[in-house]
Image (cartoon, rainbow, N blue to C red; front, side):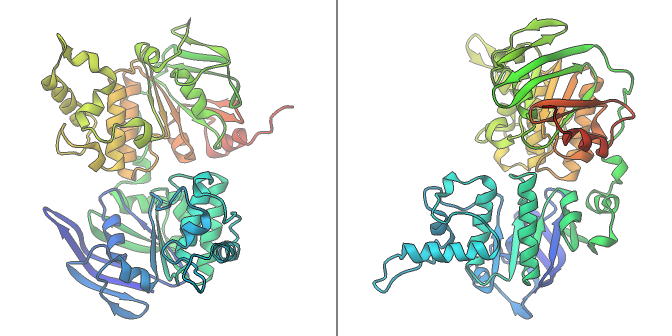
Length: 496
């Protein structure tokens, strides 16, 4: 369906693509993987007609092709679904599906009844159970994603590109998405699937192409490459190096923060957890298990209906995040852009955001000191940027996450909570974040890591606490932690 040969694309000072070969067959799901900056986004935009290649040749559907813009690619049957949906929340599902292609009557007016009927038929054809009259703003994120796919199917779609489609969904929603994509593949559609989640690549895709530093590395049938080999292609490291061993090792220290019998209305029931100095504790469970709510309670961000929190063995009342910060507790939220970063500010402002009084002298702000602290963080946490004044909005997801961690590492001397710390970052950035976590643990900080990725839980945790439906169902210690044991506790039937 699509063949690219020797594609080169440069921007001022940057060679984004260098002699890239890539092909996708009709009726296959082809993974495109690589670290942030590998060239995936640029290649996608070349395929979609957003960028014109400087050199190289494109063939589509058996014919040499030159697209002057995205409109040409769409008319040919190429459609891209980006991470950020392009939907109108105050319009109905049907209106969104046919936006720009409205069904009209003989007078040229929009025929709303026909629009809804055609939308219902399209959705039913692919087993998507959504009322076409509902407003998009009232849909779940997963259903909004289905509307995006339906929008593409209005046209004669031949090639569908999905960029990190599971970044905003989980669990059963992912299974439903995979089922829909397999239906499209079986109908002859060529699909390019871009994801950092390697387990999805092996569960869904037929072939995989790896890019690194703007260059083509390899294309393999999915049955001919292991996870270890795929990571080696992507970052030049073996899988065993993904979770580097602790330097400190040793026995964990005393319990520094403990929650007993925590109750959070509708979400957490009698949960208890003890967190020790210098230990990385994993908090596992299915989506909706109450993990994030328990973490937010420890940070004073949501109220507890019952229970108590102890710091260094003494009961404390943590009613606000400010109080948590005073006690040496920090929280890296799962929503990096929405809650973790001030996206319009620079690296320096974000690194120092939780300790602003430290930089005030006689009502004057010490910008030089802030810059020095930010430069130290950039070096210590290996943040790739132009300097303290770099806007975080232009940085990769992995480097944005390191900025958030750097901020909390300055204040969290007792406990650092990381909620999905590597979501949406590439394999190389994951390794860096794991290194940072281990270094903080070596300093004596208690680490609580919430993760939906089982390899991450198993590879990083020295102890694992598992929750289901707001209840702690068990705890695994050294020598007991493996994926099967975690799944058993996460799916354990609750008494009563």
